[in-house]
Image (cartoon, rainbow, N blue to C red; front, side, top):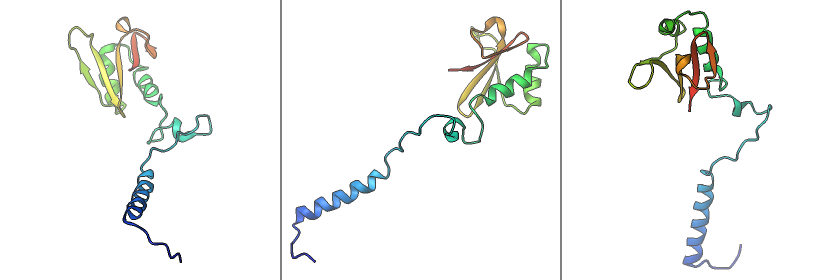
Length: 126
């Protein structure tokens, strides 16, 4: 043991150092490297990839012949949606999944949709 005495300021400094080490645990995690070996970064918490909802929407509306039948197809597929007819926007179905919004509308009202099935455009908003 050391015979050195700690002063009050030394004790305060030691306490502050201990607090700093505790708070360092709350620091953000380092960024994960990207690439094919990092599946956690590419997949969401439910194990679904980023484009799985677009694929589900395309599959749900793939066999219908009219825009007005989209609601029935979405309901049959178990996808929750809102139907919007607010002016000046064209009529569209809105799907919100895990914080992302998807729109389904007539192709003539869409600009650069992700998918087009017949005359129906499907796209991710934002």
